[in-house]
Image 1: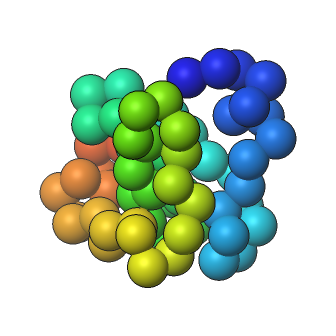
Image 2 (image 1 turned 90 degrees about the vertical axis):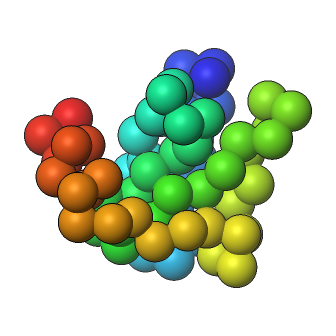
Length: 64
């Protein structure tokens, strides 16, 4: 994931910061517990395409 792009992108729901999860190829909003997919190197920043993180997943990434 391009660092410059990651610095620009925000969560479309809360406008919060996103973190890159390379293991799942997703951008994560910790505030909303949403994971936005990256398909063919393009982030899909649509709320309806995001998936809700489970509590276990959230616990793994919350300290990033």
